[in-house]
Length: 140
Image (cartoon, rainbow, N blue to C red; front, side):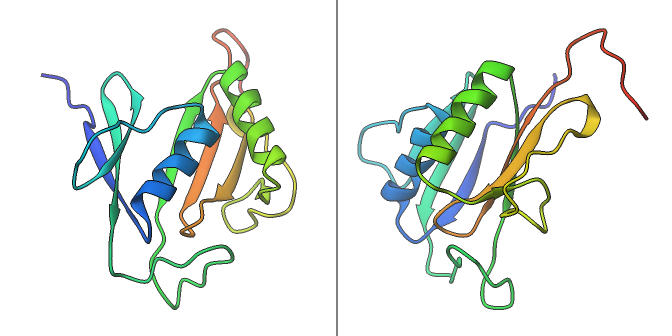
C-alpha cells in the first residue's frame, strides 16, 4: 500500500474563522456539519482539520518565543497559483519569497517554478509553489 497523508490538524484560536480564511484563499470549501473540527477538503485524499486549541498560536507578526507556529506547503498548478496569489493580494496580506522574510513583497523562482509565503491569522506560515513543467530544464 502506498502511504498517503489523510488529514492534519491545524491548531487555531477560532476553528471556523480559520477554516473559512484558508478555504477562501485556496478556493476551497469548509465541510458543513457539526464536528470537533472545521474541515476543509484540500484534494481527493487530504483534509485540513481546524481545531480550537488553548495554546498561544500567535497571529500576524507571530513571535515564535511566545507560542507555536506551523508551516504548510502546497504544490499547485499555474492557474491555481495565480488565483491564490490574486486572493492574497486582494486581501492585502503580506507575502514574501523566503520563509524568514515572508513579507518582502517578492515571489521566488526556485526549482524552476514560482513560490511565495504568507501567514494565516494564527501565525502559521503557508507556502504556495508551482511545479516546473515536464521537460523543462532545471538548474541544479
